[in-house]
Image 1: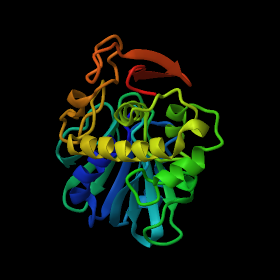
Image 2: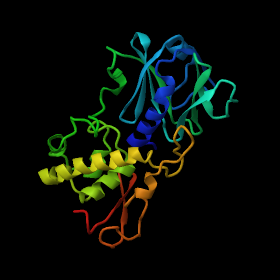
Image 3: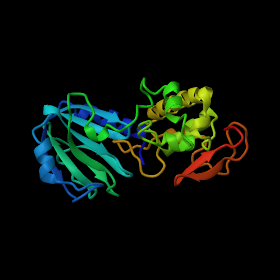
Image 4: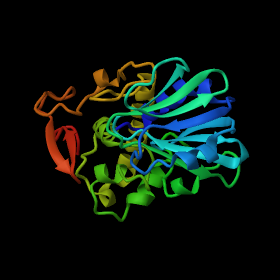
Length: 275
C-alpha cells in the first residue's frame, strides 16, 4: 500500500496540472471503491469548482476546491492518478474521470478498488477536513520531535514498530519505512515504547526524516503495484536495507536479517545491530 513518499510523489507530479483548473464534469464508472461512489453527489460537489490547492495529509490527498469544498482521496493498494488528453480512450480500471477546463482529464485508476474519493468541506481555506482530524503529526513536520515521540510512547507496552504504524500517533508511515527507519536508528522493532529512552527517540526521529526524504527523492518504492503518474516505478527499492530481505546478510554486520510478524505485518530487522 502506498505510504507517505509514494503519495507525496503523486501529489507533486499532478499538482501543476490541476491547481487553478476548473472541473467541468465528473464521471464515475463503478458503483464503489472502498466506499460507495455517488456520482450525483460528486457532480454536485465538484462540477464548476476550481482546484485551489492540492496537498498531502498522511497517506491522503486533499484536493481543495473553491467555496471551502474539498475531495479527500486515498490510493488504496493499486490506486493511481493520471492526467490525459480528453481524446485518450478510457481504460477499464479508470473508475473516476474529471474533465478539466483545458481539454484535459484527471483520471483515477484502481484495479482492486480499495482506493477512496469522498467529498468534504473545510472550516477555512487551508484546513484539513474533519475526517482527517484524528491523524497524528506529519513525520517531516515541526511537531514530530524526539520529545513528542517520548511523550506519546512512554507508557505504552506495544512494540515501537506497531506504534510507528499507528496513524493517530504519526501520519503517513507504513510498513516499509518503519522497518527501514528502525534499522537506520539501530532500534529493535520489538522494543516496547516505554523502554525507548531519549537517545533512541532522537535516533528514531532523525532516521524517519532521512528515510522518508530519501524515498521522496527516489519517487517512492515499488514492491508490486505502485507507479508514479507517468507510469514509472519508485526507485527507493534499490536502497532498502532490510525490508523483504529475510535470510540475507545485514549490510552493516553481515549476520542474517530476520523476519517476524507483528500485528499481522511482516517485520524485517537485524537482531545484532538493532537493540
